[in-house]
Amino acid sequence: MAHRQVVVIGYEDAELVDIASVTTAFSLANRLGANPSYEVSLATIGGSDIRCETGLILRAGVPLETVREVDTLVVSGGDGHRRAAASRELTGHIKRLAGRSRRVSSVCTGATLLAEAGLLDGRRATTHWLYAAELAAGYPAVLVDASPIFVRDGHVATSGGVTASLDLTMAFIEEDHGAELARYVAMGMVAYLQRPGNQAQMSIFTTAPNPDNLVVRQTLNRILTRPDADLSTETLAALARVSTRQLTRLFHQHLGEPPGTTVRRIRLEIGARLTATTELPLSRVARRCGFRSAETFRQAFVAQYGVSPRVFRATQTRTRSAAGVSD
Image (cartoon, rainbow, N blue to C red; front, side):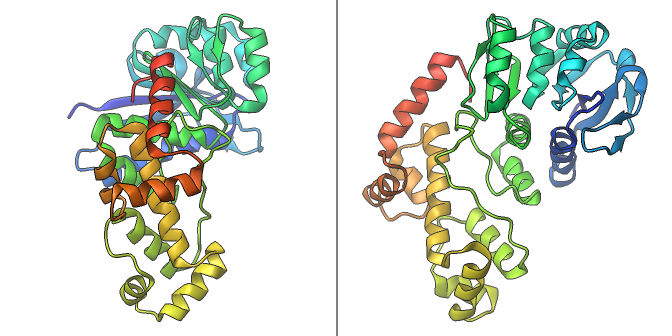
């Protein structure tokens, strides 16, 4: 398999997490995948080191001026995005490389640099919700939507604040290598689940803490990888080699809820993602998520999210179609 060059563009006062979420996810895909293919580098003007907004120093891998061909171009965000966007040299290189890249993307306020380079004109784009009004006012030709985690309009993608970069990167990995590898990358980074791009930054889906207890982590991984299996508290406790009382105590301590509630929540989150991003019949979605029937799934979905799976799917489909977003 041909190597895919991933170039992350950094600058003074970039956000470290914007950079690290992308580079770590691609690097982890190399370690977990059967056919490693990503060559990831951080590029800056002159190849100079950069001071992130946290004060940490990052050493760039390559001078931006020497980069010629790119598979995936990622522009990071951060407090320095305004000064970076004012650099004609930097935005000139972004525009130059965008014409030679299969995919162009930004993280958080990195959308400002794409907009300054003219790459978002006439396109739907997102950024951190806190900076959306500023982006819209500064670049009226950009169709700013502050709601989604990430937006893909043609070969250009933009993502919301900070950790949304991980969701976008996993979408790229899934596009290149399939959903299985993307899921393993998410698990490896204890990111829990990959969220679809049309999910709101202020999400209706619940989030999960990252437990530091080994028994709870292993049990969560079992639930995530086999939501259709027997996940009763008794079965999970037996697999974890603890009593049902001990497992329940650990879940209350680390997750704030009993195992049965966690199982139901995870099954519904997976079901919501499959409903929103696939065309599987709802009866198959229900079975894949561990529900006995489509009706049982529907009742649980309505209780959790306030709408039926069918209505939710129709809403998500209309949103993607109106925006020209591809799955």
